[in-house]
Length: 75
Image (cartoon, rainbow, N blue to C red; front, top):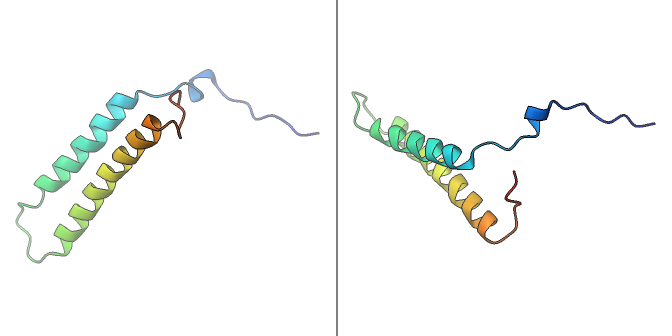
């Protein structure tokens, strides 16, 4: 007999999507501001740009999936 997992009510409650998007885009912007630092070489710059671009792509992917109905709006 399979047992159902027990969840607290707040675990199933959806988060605030707008705040998450603003947080992700704000983090990407702050990471890009780190490009003007006191470091030498471009290794740090490549990582900063790549991670900031990944955050933006995740937010854009979420917007597109929800707009096209491929991801439910209740999560």
